[in-house]
Image (cartoon, rainbow, N blue to C red; front, side, top):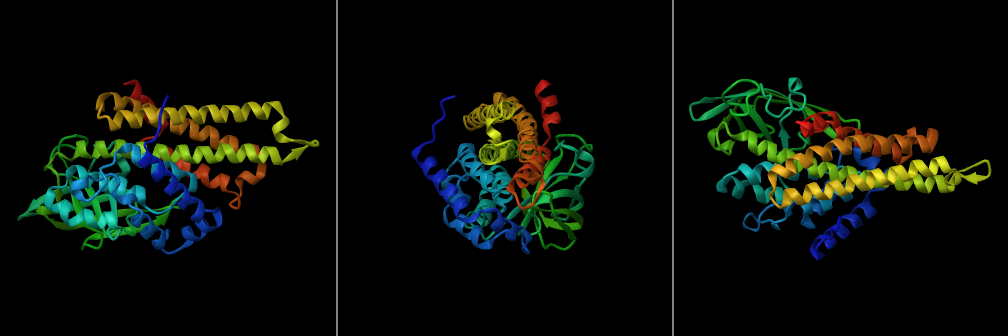
Length: 375
């Protein structure tokens, strides 16, 4: 596939790569993960100053008018550094909902803060019983004198701990698994009745279990049409899958390159490990699987950017399946070829593998998307 970045996208890629190179060695990342917020506020401000948060928003809303390709460029470099700042949670997920569903007054009030980094968003969509189905929603929002009262529980809400606002999907009509009848609401993270149980995830990020008990929000906090939130949620989920897949491809590249470097340095029987043919074959397989995954990422991202929704949807299913399958193969191979060192916290191999495992579980794992693709 002939895929070339524009001059602006190449500059963006160089900018993010330089940021990762300067700030994200394993020791620095470990310190950030152990900190109170789980990321660096200084890094967050730098990312805002560099204009990364404005990429997906239109020029009329104060953004650069970018698309999924620009997000892919950023997320691939984020994957190479295992960056912990919540670009994905706040800009891709939360920002993705706002730019699709918010009216002009809501955009005017909210987007400047998202773009300059002073406002962080979280998207609360997942529920325990739903597995990977976005339309399986038991959280409810009932009308009450010009307002809505929200009750329910959301699981694994990324960035809720430091978010200023949480976007929540709630059922306003219909049955538990109906696509119609889901609405999206903007809720202040510190609103009365919102309870957070925060915890670190296995990949070094942060997430929360969020309970809404009689949380009252004004009708002006409704994002988009009443009962019409599912399509917005689904489109945002597709963008999220593309972003996560780009991050995964970046992580895979580091894993296979680190493995090649290690086998060239480590000696066994007076020979570098890279001299042994069976290991050469394994590393060639790692490279080929990575290249196939990257090619499919480019295809899916281009189809989504061109607005070919029907074709893009099927390719996105194929991509997410391949990311899960290939991520496991490359991660397991990297750990195996590093021997016992691959399992240690002091080596970055295991950290990248754990991130790939978590990415596989977000918005549907490899088996789930294989079923969707086949259907």
